[in-house]
Length: 71
Image (cartoon, rainbow, N blue to C red; front, side, top):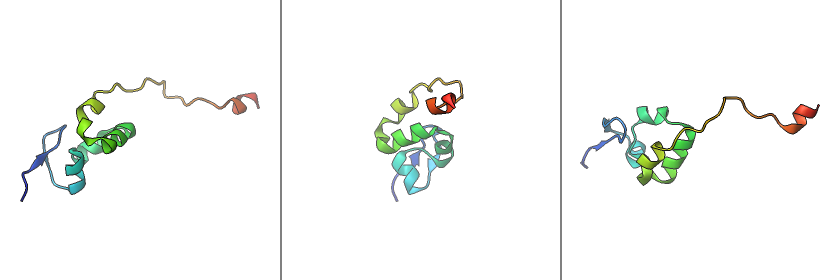
């Protein structure tokens, strides 16, 4: 059997093949934002750089389309 792999975030053992490929366990994976997940899927070797990116600043309100405002 191969050497046990640890999660890059919580350092717990990883059991599933998908989690081993991305180097992040399922519990930590669910806590990530969708943009972080997509970036890690694209480049699993850059986990630390991806997680160090700042959170985008928004006020939580989605912008309205110009057409909706004029009606």
